[in-house]
Image (cartoon, rainbow over all chains, first blue to last red; front, side):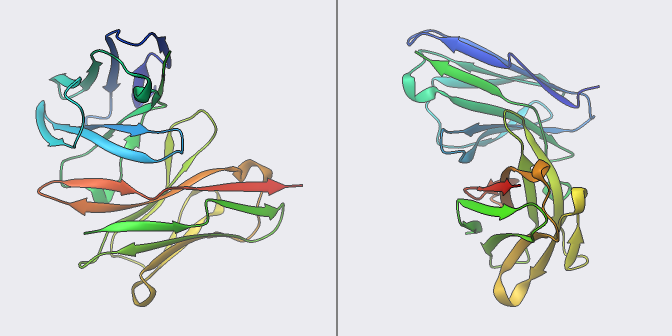
Length: 115
Length: 114
């Protein structure tokens, strides 16, 4: 059983398109996150939801819109894709918004390539 | 603000040699510190964590790290490298800005030669 699963694993699309990435966790965690890893491997947090409520919203273009239908799911929708959006997007979860001491569990990532 | 600095974007060792990956943190309060490993085309896996208990922390795959407050360091070591240890290693600190979040260092690629 995969703890944090993301779909799709690979996504190739043209500039200007709209795409979504889905994430699901079966760990019973309350908090989920989206991270972006750029071509230099740098990881930066984008969003965090706690039990369906947005709690962290970093400086991210408003073309990116997260949605959490329930605490086990966190999706990322991206409008009007740009070349600079090409990256690996990781979903993660933790036991709670202030329980980072337990660490995060990461998904295997979605490699987005915009052409 | 809390952050982490990883010295050396690449570290090369021979199989069987000591592995030392460096991480320094800046924090005004005792931090939570983590090491994650990322194998090619995979997600991040937690190696070990420091949460203000023992200063010497043992993790998976024979890795360990020592929290040294006086040096603000949390270096990762392994006595004997294996080829399978070749990966990207990330140090991270838990940053509190209303809610906790993990902030990562820039990563260190470990290369292991036969």
